[in-house]
Length: 336
Ligand SMILES: [Zn+2]
Image (cartoon, rainbow, N blue to C red; front, side, top):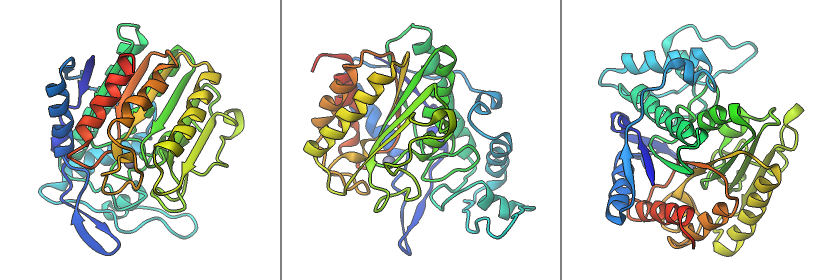
């Protein structure tokens, strides 16, 4: 199986995050990439390649140009420092006129600081996702996996957040939408708010997400079952929130409903936004899926028979994230 890697991922390494008033080491770190790659190399059957660099025009298919420019400039100006957003827009007609205010203008939480290498790392992930979309869209490959971090599915059109800067899955889906209907299936433990919102008014891109109930899990402000799309996109968004502690039995039921909805939509292509943070050992997910379940998960997706781009999202337990990805990709390309 062909794997497109983000060659610049390590340029972004947030040292810490803030959680419930405490400063803790950031879960989203370069070791995640190494753990996944090592497990894949040890399993065998994967070839790894770098993508050609995407342009800012490519990013503008999903992201606001002023946001892209902000990330580029903030990264360049970060020096050795980490730029944390701390104040967010408030009041009627909020205006941001200086760099400190812009941090809040272009972020929606404090989980996506900007470092010197952030722009390069985020651009590398976008490049990898677009390359994978082109390979699958041209028919050269039936399934391609995008090995990248930082993840992307929380990134909004003009805001970073939740460890995410550019929405890799949305960029791949947008590119594939030029060729016909596309479905995005998000199987990270967190709701893919950015991806949902990128296509919320579109009838030609179905977004389906199985995730932890936002009543108790990040990103809190989206991911409820009654968010079904708007305008022409009404009915083209499906959220399947599940309670904390969800195990294989409950997950299987939601996955079947998600896969059925994708099949009914009759897309030409599928983007699978995969997060291994549904694993039972994940430090922040709260679900209870064992490693072997990812093969079954993939078999359900494989049953759709769709050309597929798999984009890596979350997954923060270094001891299991690699094998979880291997199980998923094996299940996607070989009979269960
Ligand atoms: Zn996640």
